[in-house]
Length: 163
Image (cartoon, rainbow, N blue to C red; front, top):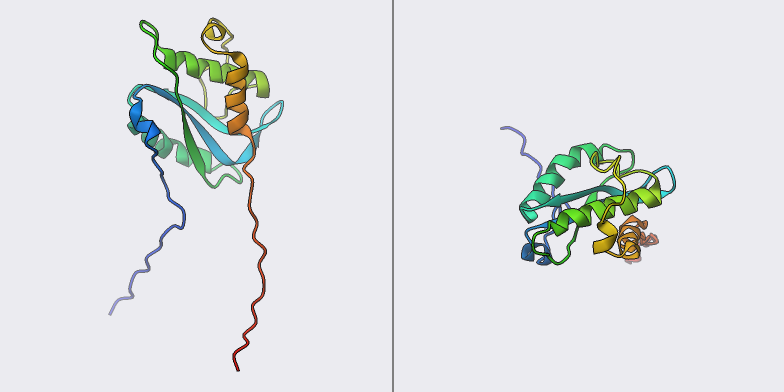
């Protein structure tokens, strides 16, 4: 008789989808690592800022494709993807302006674009400041760059008091 196979499960979900991602098709997403990464000026959890016009399916595909590359970075064990949206304006691709604004705000704060981004390395502020407050773009970047607060539970020894 052959040995039985062992079944392994994860305690935490692999992908969590929120309803807010379903409402918009054209959106920007921010991929964050579980730990902060070193950039020229400071540290940040953000590893990628991307855009999609296909909604949540593109985010899932991007997470699957990027997982290998980002999870191989030292100390990175998990990725979280967050959705950032804005209202649409007629005759303008507002989600692309938002992505460019977030990339430029990140570059201003940390000295270069996120590790996973190739787009935006040589870009400068154009008209993004006309559409979004720079302080709001920076606050979004700061919110996702902040280190995760880790709850550490104290392990206690339990005694076997059975008589």
